[in-house]
Length: 287
Image (cartoon, rainbow, N blue to C red; front, side, top):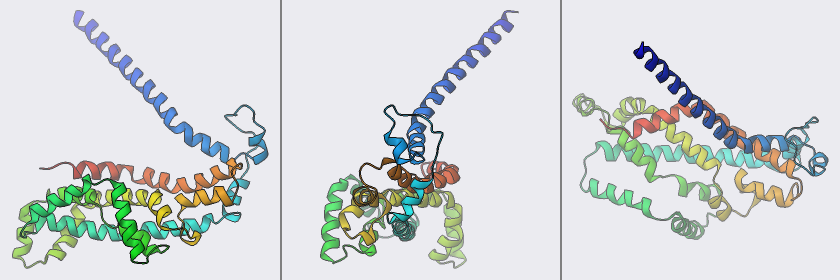
C-alpha cells in the first residue's frame, strides 16, 4: 500500500514538473514568435488604418495585400532578390568547394608542417571581424572590384569554423577505408567524392544551409563595398527602400518588404532544421 502511494505521488510530481516546463516553454515561444506575428499583422494593414490606430490593435478585420504589391512595383525589391539569390548561391558554392578540399587535406593528407599550419589557421578565428573587414575593403578597393559581384563574393568564400567542423567530421571516417582505397589505386579526389562526401553529407548540408542564411542576412560588407543600387542585396536594399521608396512613414509597406525577405529563410530552416541539428552533432562528436 505504501509503495503504491509513493509511486502515485512520484507520478503526480513528474506530471506537475512536466506541466510547469511546458507552460514556461509556451510563454517563451509566444515571446519569441510575437515579433513575427506583429510584422505580418502590420504588413496586411492599410496605410490609413495603421496611422489611425492611437492604440495598437492586435488584429485587423480588413486585411489588404496592397503593401505586397507595392513591394514589387513601387521599389526594386525584385532586383534586390535576384542579386541576393545570385550572391548567395555563388558564394555558397565557392565556399563549399574550398571548405571540402581544405578539410580533406587537413584530415587525411600528410604533409610537412600540417599541424602547425592548421594551428595558425585556427588562430585566425581570434582576429576581430572589424579588422578583417578593413583589410578586405582595402584589398577589394585596390583591385578595382568595388560595385561588382566578384568584390561581394571573394571575401566570403572561406570560413575557418566550417573547415574545422568538416575536418572533425572527416576524421570520424575509419582509416581502414582510406587505406583500402589507396591499395586499390583510388585517387584522393575519387575517394573524397565517392566515400567521404556521401558519409559526411549531413554536415556538408548543414554548412551549406548556415552559409546560405549568413549570405542572405549579410549587411555590413555589401553596404560597405557597394554604393550602386544595381548591386544592392535585400538586406541593405531595405534601407534604400525606406529612404527613396515607400518613405519613412509607410511602416506597413516596409513590413511587407521585410516579410517577403524573411519568408525564404524561415521555410529553409523549417525544412532542414533536423539536418542542421544532425550535422552539428556529428561534426562535434569524435569516436
